[in-house]
Structure formats: C-alpha cells, structure tokens
Amino acid sequence: MDTPLKHSRLYWLHALTPVHVGVGRGLDYIDLPIMREKITHWPIVPSSAVKGVLRAHYEETENSLVDVAFGSGGDSDANAGSLNFTDAHIVCLPVRSLYGTFAWCTSPMALRRFLRDITTYGGDGAGLEIPAVANANASITSSDTALAERNTVFLEDLDFSNTASEQAKNWALYIARSVFGESSWQEAFVSRFIILSDDTFNFLCDTGTEVNARIRIEQETKTVVPGALWYEESLPAETLLAGGVWCERLYKGRAGSTTADELFSQYCCKPLHLQIGGNATTGQGQVRCIFDSEAAKP
Amino acid sequence: MTESTNFQTRQQQFSQRAYQQVADRLQQEKDIQEYKSFAKRFPTLIHTCGLAQSLSFAQAKGKDAYLADLAAVANMTSEGSNAIDSQARTAGLPEYMRLTRLLLSAANWLKRFSEALIPDQAEDEGASDASVP
Image 1 (cartoon, rainbow over the protein chains, first blue to last red):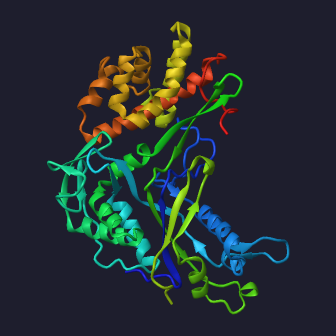
Image 2: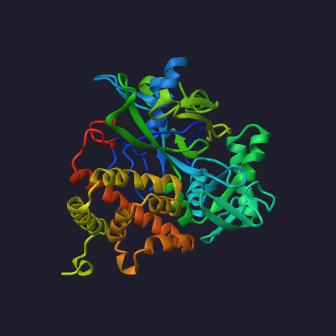
Image 3: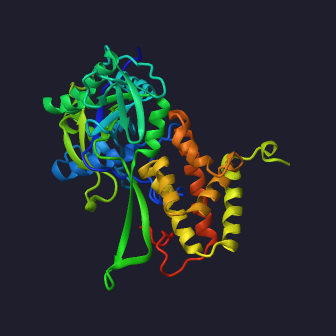
C-alpha cells in the first residue's frame, strides 16, 4: 500500500444542481462542453476552480490566513498557496433508471483510481476491493436494491443483468458515509449504487451528461433571435466527484507560527455549500463540498 | 491509394465523406435549409434520447436523405439501405455503444459541413459563433 501524503485529506463535491465547468467554445456537436480528463474523457472539475471558489468563500467570511492557504498575487509580496488541490475526478455519475428513479454509476477503473486517492490522501480504504464486471452486466449492492426488477437493471435505454456483490456493498457504504450525513440518504444511496463495466461507464460519461438547448429571445418580437440557439453541457445533479488536498510546506513569510493542521481545520474541515462553474444565475453549479472528517494526518 | 493504406485518421475519413455528401446534397436537395436545420439538431438528439429512438424519429419525419448521408459518412452503405436502423435495433449492448459513438461522430461531421457549405437564411435558427455567449 502506498504511503499517504503528510497533511492530506480527501474532498468530495456533490452536485445539488447541474454543474457547468466549461472549456469555452467546443468543436463537437455541443457548443459549450464541460471539462474532461484527457486520458479517460471522464468529466472533471479542475483544481483551479475548486481552489478559486474556496478562496472566494473564505474571503467573504474569514480571511486571516487566506493568503497563506490559497496564495496571493502582487509584484513584491506574492506567495504560492500552501494548500495543494488535485482535480476532482468522477466517482459516481447519476443515470436515469426505470426503477429507483436514478442510479449512481461507477466502474472498476473509476474505483481503482479512487482507491489510490483514498490511500494517497490518508483515507481508510480497508475492506474496499475492485470487482470485475463484464459488459452487459452490473454489480449491485443487494438483490432487493431499488434498481433491479426481475434481475434486470434498466438505465437510459441500456439493459443490464445484475449480480449482488459484497464488494459493491462495501463501496456503497464507504461512499454513503463519506458524503451523506443523514441515514435516510445513506440508505437511498446504497440502494441505488451500481458498478458497471469500464466500457459502459465510458459510454455513459460521454452520452449520459445533461445537454440543454439554450436560446436568446428578441424582446420586441418575443421570438428567438436569428442564430441564437446553442447547446450546452452540464454534469447532472447528484454527480459525485472526489479529489485530494495536501499541505507540503508552509510559506513562512506570511504563515508566522501557523501549522498545516491549523490550515486544514480552518479551510478544509466543515462541509460547505458552494457555487462552482458557470451559469450561476440559472441555478447551476450548486455543490456540497465535504472534506474527509478525520483530523489532518501528521 | 485506398483509405486503408493512406493511414488517415477516422476523423479525416469522416470529414472527406461528409464534405462530399453535403456538397452533393446542396446541388440536389430542394429544401436544403430544412436539411441543414435537421443536421444541426440530430447529434444532440442522439445524445439526449439515445440512438435507436433518434433514428426512428428521423424515419418518422421522412429524413431519408439525411439518413442516407449518415450511412455514407459512417461507411455503412454497403450493408443495405436500412443498415443503420436495423443494426441499432438488434445490436447487443457493446455493439450498440460502438454504433452510437460511430454515428455521433458521423452526424457531427454532417452538422459541421452543413454549417460550412449551406448558406444561412434569416429565419434559420442554428447556432453561430457570434451567438454563443
């Protein structure tokens, strides 16, 4: 097992509404696509967005160590931030389901990478194993899950036979406890958690995102302005992403007697309600940001 | 030199075929603006509604010219006129996923060249560079 980074912890982003962290104009059939990881093409929320939004939040509420934690600009007194964030990677993508309303989908490779993050950033991954899942099959938490009917799960227009597995249940419990405080939400999550094959998860990460047509209205005529129709993509509400944050060194000029533990307890501890990405005024980007509850590792 | 020995990317091959199909369609099709409008909407329809439903919708709306072009761009014309539709209905899951991606890519090129080659009309509703915020 890898040695965890010193002074590190996991963070989660839980989308409460669709989230549009865009890349600007796209060349594909979606005019305004979301940001994706190069090697997997899975959606991500980049670390710069996470860090910037956290900084903005704490500048408004409490700012004694904001420059130490997040860095500051300037010609003569600039310093880098002491808190280092990774991009938030997808862990569970919600997908419409015929039974159970929607499913929180993941895959063996997504979990394998997440387990590496858990180990790296000081989480407790004991008992978590990576299941093997064949194409057209799915691993669910139990046979009486909300998703399955007559041993079949129906997601979007894809049908899967399914197998209840202890591995899926352990993962579901781990994520449910990490993200959902209320026991009723934990139960809802476990009942809707599903592990699909990597190929199927890839496909759903491409085609399972939200794509909405947007228009601009001509005030005089109350009709669409010629040419003013575009398609924009969002991560659906209920998406779960996770990343890591660590503190390798403190920039002492500003830090004084501050310790990494203090930075974590001040800026990476309590759950936050944040707005991230574009289209805030149309209700997009509302997320819960949850930090691993354990104290910063020595 | 054939395509297979020319070591072109799949996207290059798609773009060549899509260019030719749209250029030909521009000479033949009476309601070219309608063709363009549908070409611009169809990839998003696949994304939001799924491949099988989108193909059925296109058939129901009489978009045979568009579907023929889509088959040509995806290099599926040798498999018969209804190849796309029948494959989408009968394919197993892995093949259905592959077919969806293939046709999304082909449809994207038809959208691109429809925008590039077919002139805009005032009432056309498609996105333009200037309109995207």
